[in-house]
Length: 58
Image (tube, rainbow, N blue to C red; front, top):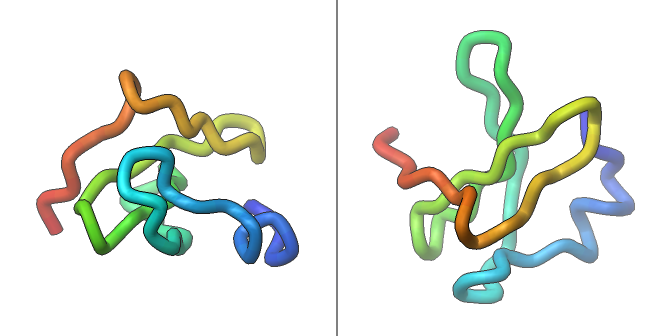
């Protein structure tokens, strides 16, 4: 789980929108609702690389 203090300062690297935590099954992601991109969280570390962004199909 990503700490709230970190979530408060992180922004989507694509559109600079706010992000929120999103869980699907047992996987954790950070989700930008502005551009519908998700970023994986691995070992409590957000992987916010544009090349690894996943399209959100909620």
